[in-house]
Image (cartoon, rainbow, N blue to C red; front, side, top):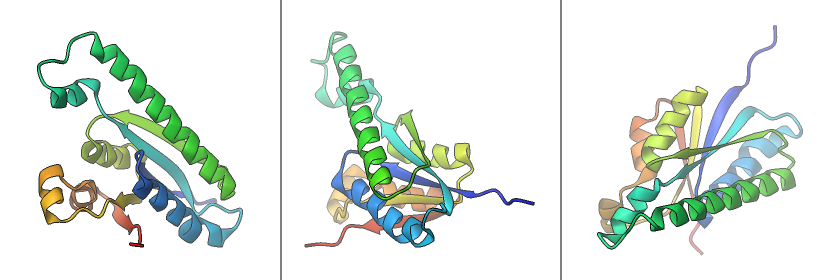
Length: 159
């Protein structure tokens, strides 16, 4: 009887912190197994909803801007997807599923864990101090408390 592989979800945005988390995961949790992948790898990109981005701009945002924002957000998601596939290919990880979901990253990642029945969630840490974390919120902190699986928070070493 063959056992089904567990699922690992990795959070990905356009930051060097999430790319570092992906690379760290591939080097430490995939490379030791050679060509046998220990997990089904699902990389999730939380694409912002254009209207939520426009709320930051204020009332000057008009209906003409939304289609342009949509195009830019789709291009960014495609660029991130290509970077992920390129890195996975370089690290000899051939089976990777990309999932681009729309919404707040905190909610998207917890939903992705449920959707893919993941046993592990990997998120990068931006290394915000207490003030920035209080203002911006911490995706990794939220996921550590709300995701229904083990959470690995990868911190990029300070140089």
